[in-house]
Image 1 (cartoon, rainbow, N blue to C red):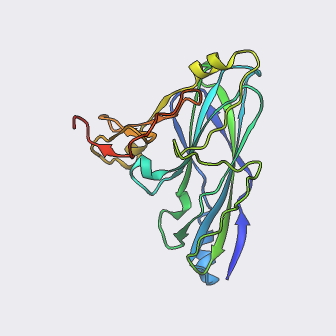
Image 2: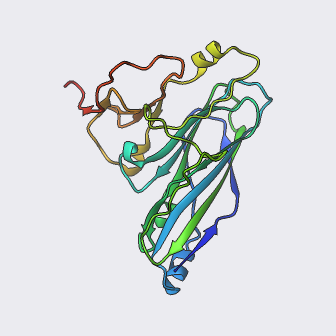
Image 3: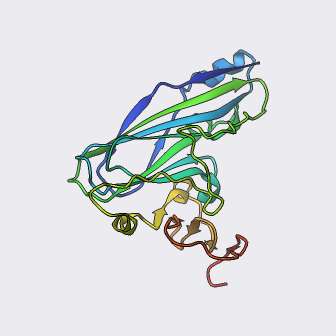
Length: 246
């Protein structure tokens, strides 16, 4: 027994700051109990649709990092479902992601499981300005079992593939006013996140030479993006994680 339902296409204003923001994609608190009364046991997060519109003139060198987070997990490396780096110079950016995992309707953290992490840089605004608007929608399946959905096997227009090198999808638009080389200099090679501080958890710093996530001594995590114009290292070593100083 199952049926598909979607949230309304909601929106929230993004303040003018280069600090990261965590936006909860909430489920109405009355629904889980209602679903359980009808005999359902699990919710499958199938699709998350995101739209980001910059409130400034076209052509500005604004860079955005958008990440989809399972906020129940304490480590950022494990919590990050997908992350995308994109420019906002031309038009509203639309992204469709497929989390495809189940959560028990009895999980007390169900209502705020999914969060969008957002960070904008490149064109600072005055304080209290609204820099952008984030639109979001969740499509989920209510079911009386814990089986996952089958993901589409063909490339859809809005489906983001994950590369084997960085394990992160990319969406990059090149402003016509600048060259590709100048754009690559402006794109961030790394970002810093303080996600772990949301859980007030103290963890040992972690380093990795092959993956995109690095925990720092201050409890934040660094997210690195591979430069698409740099040649890949020949015979790369297997991914490994080591503590600082070892």
